[in-house]
Image (cartoon, rainbow, N blue to C red):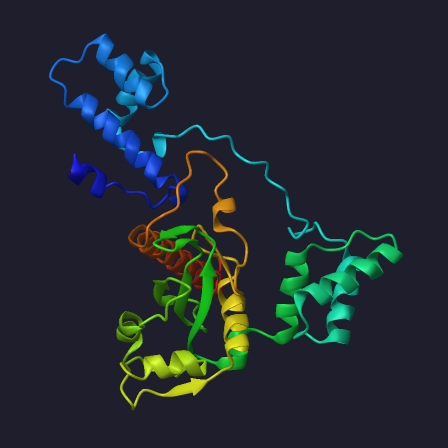
Length: 320
């Protein structure tokens, strides 16, 4: 049974539900291990999952069919989805131009808060619905130019924070991520996950990027730690911590795979990101596994997008 729990494919499951999925599998495997289960056994094991006998039997059949964790839904009510005004065709062109004008006036390096506030004031004065924060952020990124234009084919190593609560001896925290990504291709080469109160070692990350051709771009603190493990002949350049995080945000956006990330310190209570009594904060081992799943998903999406773009550039064969 321990092997069954270790080998579960949870890559498509919300990490906050992992504890609940494992509990369900444990109860199901306990029941299936009985030589001749009775109706009393079904009632007893179903009660462990707050399910009636028939509901539990249906879950048993589902699990026996293909052992797919995605079908063991905890039945958590989904939160209402707010549709973004940033979607294609959803932003008033006049509002978009107002936003571009504000960005040109304040400069693309102005804080998002300043940009959003001034855009809102000007749009309200003209009775125009202002663009979302996301749209304004994307327009400011557009104004700065693409990261590959600024930094070329560099490997950027910068910090971010994972919006996923993780339990430590000192309480629940949002982990710190140190991400190494190829700026040109957007492919993530390595991620180290650490307690935000600790200093990441970066040994494993250095191993992943050592010996690659592009220059390594990092802030002074990260560069100093990397230099312990990266050979001296590896080209390295310095970027400020602020610019490093900003460039990482441009390259990756707000998510890595299915996981939300932030590029500034998260001061809120991590426990508040759990919205169901079934949600559980992760330990660091599970957090690192979740990040590995997210990195794999991100890189697969980047590769698929690159392949689609390449395919679209192939000239069609004229008909005879």
